[in-house]
Amino acid sequence: MALANCRECGKLFVKISSDICPECQKKEEEDFNRVKDYLKENPDAKIAEIMERTGVTESRINKFIRAGRLSIKPTCESCGRAIDSGRLCPECRLKLLWEVRNIIGVDKGKEHEDTFLLEYLRGKRTGK
Ligand SMILES: [Zn+2]
Ligand SMILES: [Zn+2]
Image 1 (cartoon, rainbow, N blue to C red):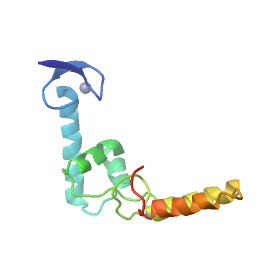
Image 2: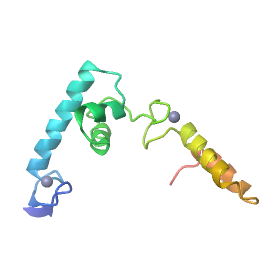
Image 3: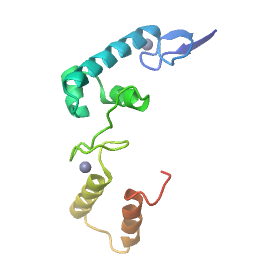
Image 4: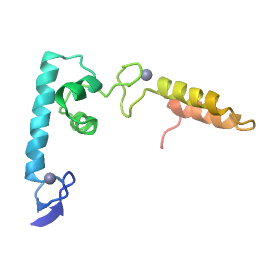
């Protein structure tokens, strides 16, 4: 039997299969049921909406999604379309970056970085 610190509350507990303690697991289960119930009534709900209505944190909702327990995808916070991960879709991320660039000004001689960024955001490059 191995002892481990709960990833949620930090308490020492006997680790069986989960990396969180039984109490946090129970709470997580309650959160899951709340989200699931909410989705039953509102199948098209966005994550932001679910968070607001259920009080469940985004990271936890995303954890359920990653575990395949919820059949929803994370959505772009800006345009609301379904995305695979993160907070913004590639287009909105790019738009945001351009806006930031317009505010801080484009550094001459760094145009090649923009090309890289563009390709990266379009998913032509993988990795980080
Ligand atoms: Zn815990
Ligand atoms: Zn978007």
